[in-house]
Image (cartoon, rainbow, N blue to C red; front, top):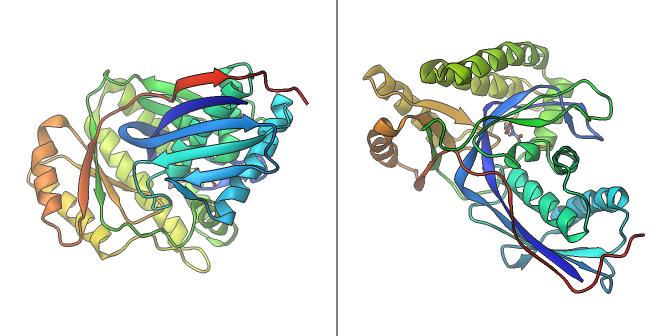
Length: 336
Ligand code: 2P0
């Protein structure tokens, strides 16, 4: 048996990924730009066990649903093929935030799992290969492998070999904050993969979203290079609203917002008019994340906490990339 534990933080896209150019290889149609978080994340322990007949998944101390297990097992089958091993895998994973609620649990989950399982299987630690594997699990997972601000290019290669994450700013090199305003512990109704596929197939706004994204990403990359906070904030909001507009244009339409989401958006806009610079982004769930600078954190947090329906506001800063916590072996993983 060999075991390894890895930790990965969640990431939030400022320039969103929404739609795939290849669904089998999970390749994005658009580039994206994200911030890896400092506290919300996943810790995963993987054990390769020759005595197991099937993969096992324990999520936050409870055996996972059939759906979650089969998604993970399909992913592990691909890792087994690449890594040339046969053992079934026991996976124990803990998220320190609600799963499937639009807080990027699949990004941190598949980043941590990829790192842990490749290590437990004794595969080489080539970062590009690791990113490729993580992407097969979840399109946003390669971004969680790196810390700070990260770009993920869609690439053009049919095999996805040029779809790789790149660190733009290391944690600590630009002190921006992201306030995560949680308003419900409920799971989202439409998962990201289904939502983006439905948008691609049925929303007449999808083409416009793709065109807008290319421009938004260029603007955002320059803003990051120039450390131009306001331009980054404005384009962050634009990317978010364009993504959601494209999703709302799908058939049937996809709404991730609830009334508290909209109340939070309006509050942040009103505060901005009075000189408090926060910019919102929203993922495939109802929570609002607010990009801001350190000096505006207190005012924003106090104001957001005053909104009826807000349960918790978590302050995040650019955080670390995925890390191996420990690994041990009681015999080599057999090559298959
Ligand atoms: C993002 N999201 O860029 C976008 C914005 C949600 C909204 O990436 O199908 O779980 O596994 O590639 O990575 C969430 O989608 O979807 C996501 P798959 P994933 O963060």
